Length: 155
Image 1: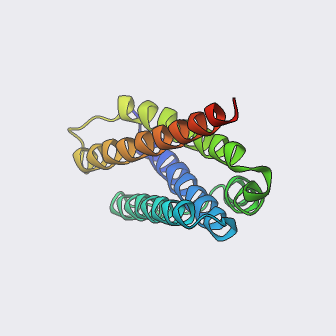
Image 2: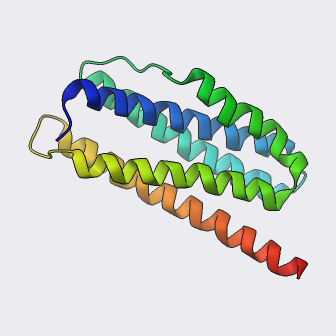
């Protein structure tokens, strides 16, 4: 089981990751010329922002302070790619997003295994982690499906 200090580090990691995904999708939406794609990316950005806010709340409940431990990571993996991916093509944009979602899924699954639901706020945290994991899995599946569809059109 994970101790409180390590748990707060994990939660701040997820807070940062979710903010990076928010930056990524919202910046990609700004660069998209496709109305549907832009709307999907905005919607995904809003969902990721909700995830970040959930982590902020639980961090505070556990006596911590939400910090962007990886502000540089967020900038490098969210803002910059978000501004550049529209220029590298939709297939590559979907791949970047797919990989970000894959990282989130891997880390969510890892933390879920380490949580003791009998400790204070842990049941609530597990519910948040599982709900976010479902969202991330759906996002990743959407990007994968769309990317494969575009690749098949090119054949």
